Length: 306
Image (cartoon, rainbow, N blue to C red; front, side, top):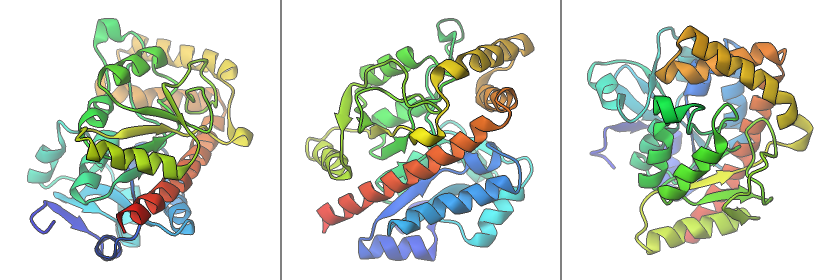
């Protein structure tokens, strides 16, 4: 670990040395997800949710050219107020580091950082996937390929509902990524508990998910697992209510020529407007729910390694 180009916070380093459960957290939700101070408050709440279950949170980001796993309160506040922060995925992570930049990690980049830090489970909101119209644009998130090659279990609320969910599931299957719905047969759709699509796999306990993670390693299977944890029922926005907002947001993005990394932030911001802020409240609820489940999985993984 000492040779890895990553700095572990004292708390994360101690937990890793002692075999205690650790949960990785992404940083794009801080820099590209919501305005200050709501972004800071949410990041602090997610870290608190992990700690409440007895695990250690490790928010991952690149700060002035150095990859960090675990941020101090001052670093977290600085990132929440920073301007011009890069949005990092596999393709641009190294370039940001060697040029001394500051960048927030997407799902793919957070998985890379977590693996370097020896962290086996990661909580996020929703993964990227196949965008609407990808048969013309070829716009497919690097998150899917990362899941196929980096051995981290990722807990999310499904793929973001702005995406083409049937095609996203097809690509995950092609790449050999175990896609597990937690506690239900249907694949959840981020803000909504139901998508109308059956999940390839179902598991009902953190211990089962942890055991599958271990078995994949024993079998020599590369890549991670995707755990789709439905948003709490009290906080969900039914898919039928969201359909019109998503259609309008996609049409607006196409009309404005929005492409690449700018697509998802644009769509999420537009849907926030169209739902009168309701989508943000649901987003926060589902991230907190995912952090709790990830911490429970991390406990089961730590127990199995003891």
